[in-house]
Length: 276
Ligand SMILES: C[S@@+](CC[C@H](N)C(=O)[O-])C[C@H]1O[C@@H](n2cnc3c(N)ncnc32)[C@H](O)[C@@H]1O
Image 1 (cartoon, protein in one colour):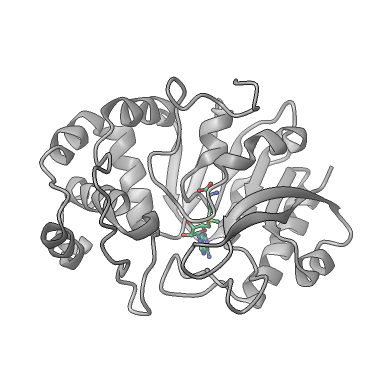
Image 2: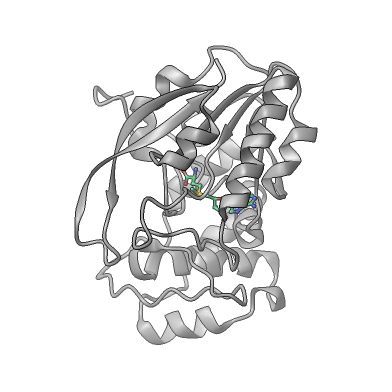
């Protein structure tokens, strides 16, 4: 650990994808909410997996509804050397970007699919995974001078951390059946929007609605009844405070892009909700 409370990216496993809502910057503030001991670690809204890579739990079940993402994690876990080799052939230019973006992932091998996602993630605007209503990746080219499309050491460290870890494409509700008493479940859903303009929940072709937030609270209740330790991240909004009013609710501070084009940034409060 560094003095800042953040782990050193140069030597420890770290997220290999840039993901909207990534929790890397918050890890120092999260330490006090993490139970000292737990059975299996569950992260049902995996995204970039910052908390998983920080905790490096002995047993873990990671899932996300995004099939491309989970396939990519599987390739990093199972075929990291093939992945590194394949990624080295990708140039950073606009023409290649739009050609790769136009490929239909379902027509590609799992390895090529993972390459496509990593390449688009490193070269697209803001590293923002976004899908249109037909479920197609639609972020424009990012025009970065020299993006690190392939970081062999980073991928190898992530691969090492993922050995023995269960990865599944699942909706978050599945964690009720999967988690057992004594397990730790960290839930980092698409945040409830602070305002209509700050809205970003389109990781997938479908928005995460108020009804989904309510369903998530029911999942938290069920996990609590089962005897799991539960931690949830969400926006500091009246709806979220109301939904979780019977739980411990604390504020943390994050730097997030607060305008649509990312040019205005400032510290904003977010919530951490825990059942112990
Ligand atoms: C806030 S991000 C997670 C960020 C992650 N914790 C990180 O540090 O990068 C939310 C994730 O939830 C996933 N997601 C959206 N709806 C979902 C659902 N119904 N079930 C499971 N995952 C879902 C998205 O694909 C996205 O990866």
